[in-house]
Amino acid sequence: MSRLFRHALATGILFGASLIALPNTPLAAADDVSAFRQADHSLAEALANGDKKAVAGLLDEGFQCVEANGRIHTKAQVLDDLAQFAADNEGTMDVRTVDFLGQVERVLGIHHNQRFAHLWVKNPAGWQAFVYLNIPIPAERPEIMAPPPPPTDADKVCENPCKTLPYKPENAAEEGAMAAWFRLKNDEWHPNPEDWAAHTDVYHETLTPRTDVPKLQHVEELAEQRKALRRVRRLRRFLRVIHAHV
Image (tube, rainbow, N blue to C red):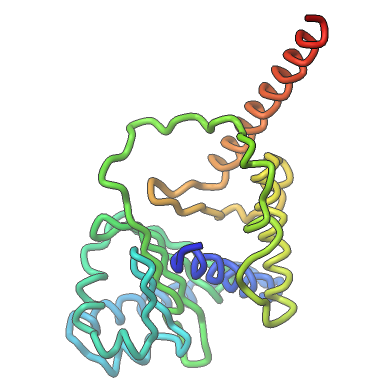
C-alpha cells in the first residue's frame, strides 16, 4: 500500500473519529462559519506575505501536508520551506466548503492539476488547518466514465481494506470510525447500496484522481455493480445447467 493511501486511510479514520466524537448540536452558527472563513483568508494572506509566525498560528500542532506523490510534510517542515508551501497552494479553483457542526470544515477544490482536500478544526486557539491532501489528476481523462466491470476471481478476497488496515486506533472514537470504515468497504466489496447509503453522511464525497464522487452517484454506481454481479451469477448458473446436460 502506498504512503499516500496509508495516510489517506489514517486521515479518513481520524476525520471520521472527530465527527463521531461531536455532540448532537445544531448546525454551526453564522459566526462560526465567518470565523473559519477569516482564518482561511488569513492563512492565504500570511502565505502570500511569507509571514511564518502568522502561518504557524494557523496550523494545528499535528498538521500534515501530503503531496500528490505521497510525500508527507509536518508543520515544522512546512514552516522551514514556506515559499514552496505557498506556491503549492496558489491558484485554487472550484472550491467547495462544508461545515460539520461548527467544529470541522472540509474544503475541496483544484489547483496545479491536482485535487485537494483540506480539513480545518476548531481548537481553543481558534480555527487551524489540520490536513492538506493533494491527489493528482491524470493527463488524459475520458469524457464518459465506463460502467463498472463485472467482478473477477481477485475480487473474492478483500483482506485490506475490508477487514484490516495498517492503522491502530488510539481511542474508542477511532475504533468506532474504523468499524464504520470496514462496514462501508464491505458494502462496496459485495455491493450493498442501501446499507452504504444508510451509513454515510449526506455530504460524503469520494475523492479519486479522476473525479469527486458525491454520495448519490456512489450509491448509483454500487447499484450498477450489484446488477453486474447478479448477471454474472445467472450466467454461471446457466452454464452449469448446460454443462450438466451435455
